Length: 319
Image (cartoon, rainbow, N blue to C red):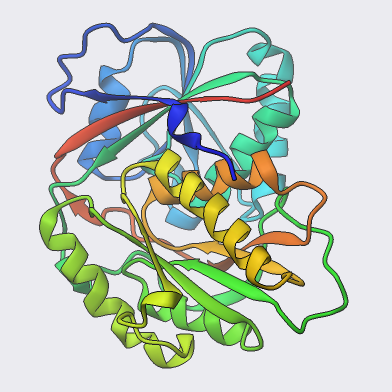
């Protein structure tokens, strides 16, 4: 296993009064209507700022924000970023200091963008995430239309799978979307299933809300949350702790009995999904491990209220 907690993390003031924060060459953010996305965009100091318009939010051109806006109608993450890099040119990023605000990103887009930068040879990325004061409707908050049209591997995160499926494992990062949790679990019905929860949660009340929703999907998962051998925990706002826990989990499960295939599915916070991404890009190439995701047609433009905390994570890739 690898200890990812050696990576650097810094908390930034939630009022924008930032000190000792670099001026980046390029800042990339995905637009939605949340206060925590728009305020950070204004506070960041960068030579270039790029708004990405993910089609899943269904914004019309007359609703686009001011600034350098990039988007297309493809809901496939690889096609979306192929178009983006064709427009800006991959040479733009060579040797540059890059920062990504993942707060507004739909997870497969975020994961694929980081995959692209690693493949392009970018050695270092700064990542920003802004935590909400609360979700708009607590545990009843809807993040997507929940009409899953496809469950598939995220592009760039497809493993080389073995025909033997006798000891397949599904690890779900369980968040508020109980319907998505249930559909993924049913899609991989043959797999043994483990859940990872965010603890500590982003806010004290959010853990209880998370658990209330996860119980709704317990029949599909096949095990209860109180079944401790099937449940793991890592801080909801710490991707490095998440990656470390995943690394230890896979190592432990393989030692117990060699796994045939592993499927990872991060459905909780963006920092958790970042931890899944970091673990995969560091340890899982050429292995029978894939990142899967339930794809929906539309996502809610604004799900939260306020800003409680802002974190900056620095990821460095090996050569």
